[in-house]
Image (cartoon, rainbow, N blue to C red; front, side, top):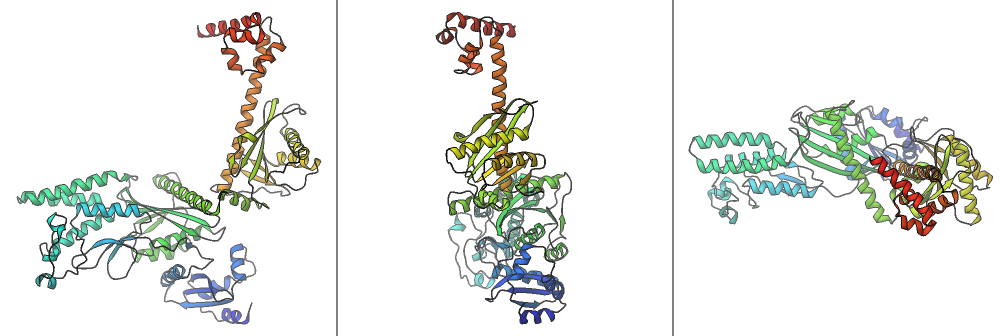
Length: 611
């Protein structure tokens, strides 16, 4: 540690604030907040650091810069703003620099409503951010269709109206605007309409419909039929819009559902906005982080990024785990919320849990989309192979994987399968079937040893290259048997794993304890897919063998049919084909007399079974 850093650590204040870690080039590599700067910053420099990420960060710290604040909430806001501005390497960051659009309701006597990416603290109201621009445009089209909001950019004031500074435009004549520029609608009436728009943007469409129905009935009772008809048309349009919104909750409380899918350095976040029981919006954005980031920190970052701007804060935020500094986050959210907010973490099967699972599926799909886009940029090799190389600590990318499975029924007709995946996809032309020859009875370990020996002795004979990864279906026993076979062949340079089905444990060479990869990981899903394909292929071959043996016995039961005739037929046709062959076709192969015996046997049997 350099003397400057050592002096700063000795003189840290016990106050709330933000700390910035800098590297030897003066670049900020991490920004954090603390209730007590002295305790928090010193905790990074303890000897018993067990986090690889923290250890890597500390090794690069050359200087510390502090900003003291009045309280932890101020520190949280400042930390968030600094992360967005500086994008330090060791913080969780928004993946791209683009700002998402909002719908802006301007702070004017006669407000304008339009999309913007430039958020300014000028008293205007902002709705969003809209990560799906198409969704934002649909919202604006609805507003322009139902409400007569002005499209002009004039600065309309009472003084400008009195001086007749502006003239009505085409929108007024085609009844798309009520002409506030000439004072043809009062400021009060216009702002009433703007408040109705705000209700739609907040997802309170059903509440607005009830309000408009009351206004329509009131207008009709006063014989204001033109106004009543206009309100009726507005109600009908809103009802059509409302009917398209999916009802997902019987509970009418306003809530946001937040879920994240993450792998490696990629985080995909999905937020579902539910208002009055209806799904009114979906927001998605990508984050980057260091590998093996703590899940609580990921969710804390998502909440800070999403709610930092002008996002409406609901009464409930349903989330998978409690975020880091949850008490501070709730205090910060409640300072800006209309109603007090709380985190809900569903523990058992419930409507909230089902909504969270739906949100999780959306996040997972978005993560796969991110990975697919990267794959297109980086070339033809799927990202999942990089993930698999990382998770299994392989020396090179596992582009070619060979997987083996044993299948038998109480030790009879033992067979094995080998499936091959290249670049994460099955290559069926390279699949192989094995009939177990040296093992009697149900002995999967010995069977695996035989198959591995046979397969890779052939590789040596034909001077072929070994696969990048050998995989066996099973645990420690199957893996040890496979390794023993490779050892007997004198093969040393290879990668091999065993995948045990019960707990999806991965057994590695020279490791006593199994490896557990997160169930959400794409690398584990690929291994499961390969294992299941090997199992399917082995079962199919085993069934074919058993059926063939049973059918051969059945053919031999026909008087006049011997083993030679049975084998001749089975070498040319499948079991079902033999049963359905015409007598003439059979005669071409085995002669008329034998053909007649077989044809009559199966057709009489079919007639009997049908009766």
